[in-house]
Length: 559
Image (tube, rainbow, N blue to C red; front, side):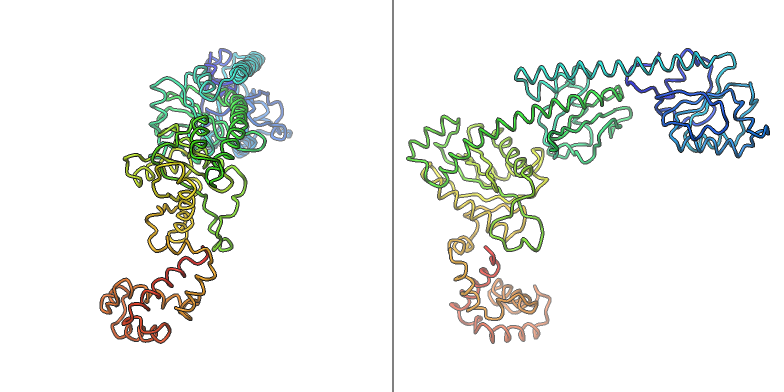
């Protein structure tokens, strides 16, 4: 009797049924894994209009040999029959041996092999009623068993959620039922829970489905049952976690020996519904907590939360420790690479709230893994963290955090910029540090593009320029110093590049010509043209300083 790994009966399993003992596969071995959902007898030669997908067809051979005219079918007609059955998704064809067809033509067998459509001979003494009865019995038994498994799982998982359980408990239940490794993750592959025996989990994490940081590459998976890459017999079952039209991720089951089946997919779909319930509950609770924490932290960042003692006390009630050396970190999702968004001082709202929520969740998970008492809150367009540094190198700490967020914690699906303040030693310095981190984000994105990481102390002269609130005054200064070079024309941009390289090389003409790959005389001509526009910058150090600052202002246009 076939093993109940799924409620669907394959052709391979079908041929092992007692009622088909002695049956012989003669062609179409490539289709042995086709699914059988129903069975029918061919009684007429023009059967094709009535064939249903996944249908097993059995025949005495009489309808194949004699048409309406009473003349024998030729091999070409039998080839057309096989092609028609395969096109309509029939599962297989069984022909009673030696009754009306002494031998099936070679062309018919070749067509079965070519199309992967199983063709087998049924011993003469076997009755069709026995075959049909046994196939129907197995299909009903398997479907009933599958429904029972899914129903038992659904009841068990629902009980877990109603009793306050969470994703790890759900994963444990599914892993125990199928003796598999189970993983629950967000849509971008951030792992939220795993369960199963240690060997199974080790085998799962050994698959080429994880990036170096541990994030599951969800783009390589699809809904349903599929072979596990990197294994010979491993199988993966995947079901999406969806609630209210929102994609909340995947639940994945894996076994190394191919022991999963369609029942697992059906059960996982039930489990995914319960996971969605748990995730929705988490989001609801998190939203209330985040609103409360966010309102308070916003007051702290704005300097309106009270005295230092009051802030420290309130933070302690929220299990935050702010009485130590720390930096303020601000992370902002980058706007789309659209010319219409260029020059905006504030990134536009990202479509939907999910990217921002996932970025917040990623930062919270990473920071809490490093220090569970560090405040991390997500706002409408930014995530703010008060990260302790102590005696650690600030740049190293931030690099490790960002690497984790952009890797296995899932923040890397959407590019974001990060700004870091100076180190502060008390809550009194938080508002100023927050302003520094926000300036670092803005300047960093402008100077280095999307995904930039900028420390306020590393902004150089841009730090001073960013402190000028009147951007019109900055632009007026640049226009006065650079004249026509401050424009956006191609010639102006080209000449500004030459001017910048000259300043970078301390007006060394030979070195500038080498860097720009210009002939010496060509560069001399350009220098003359530049001095006719901005003045004798090569000999006037004060003018040279003004020109250098003006070039930085043009670079920062739009800040």
